[in-house]
Image (cartoon, rainbow over the protein chains, first blue to last red):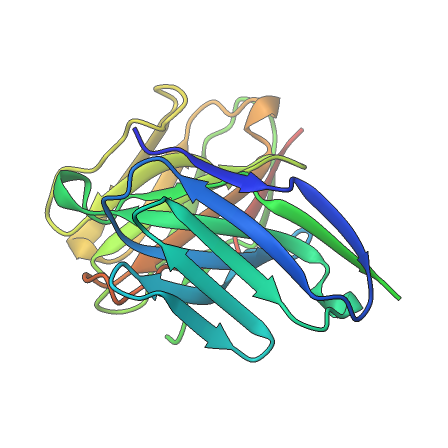
Length: 114
Length: 114
C-alpha cells in the first residue's frame, strides 16, 4: 500500500527566504507526482506535475524535483512571499493495476510573514 | 467548461435529510475522484471512477454514502440520512488518461448538517 509522508508538517519563515518542502513515498511504481496548493476554505490548485521519467519541473519561483528510485520529491520555493502562505500537498499517481489512483500526503502548512 | 464544476457550492441541511452533490468533470476526462475534507483535516478518499471500470468504493465511510457516474461524465455523490459528522467540504477531481496528465480539482461543496 502506497504511503506518502510530507515533512515538515508546518513551516514559518520570514519573507524572502528560500525554502524546501519534502515529500516521500513508499512505492516507487508511480506514474507521476503532483504538487498542489490549498488556501484556507478553498479547493486544490495544481502547481507542478512531474512524470515518472522526469527529474524536475519549474514554474516561476517554484521548482520540483523527483528521485523515483529513492521515493522522494522536493518542492523548492525561491524568495518566498506572504502570498505563498498556504497548505502544500503532494500526491503520487499509481501505475500498474492501480493505474490512476492518487495517494496524498498530509500536507505542509506554510506561513510566510512580512 | 474549462474546469471541474461542483454544485452546490454550499449546502445546509437538517440532520436526517438526504443530499446530492454534483460534479461536472472536464470534458473527456476519464478519471474522477471524490474526496472529503473535514475542518482542519487532510483529504479523505471516498470513491474513484476510471473509465468503464468498476469504481473503487473502498473509501466510502458507510452505506449511507453512494456515488454514480452517468455516461462517463457527470457524477453525483448521495448521502442519505445525513448526520452532523458528515459536515465537511466535498471535493471532486478529474483527469485524462496518461501519465503526462495530472488532476484538476473543483472548488468543492461545503456541506453543513444542522
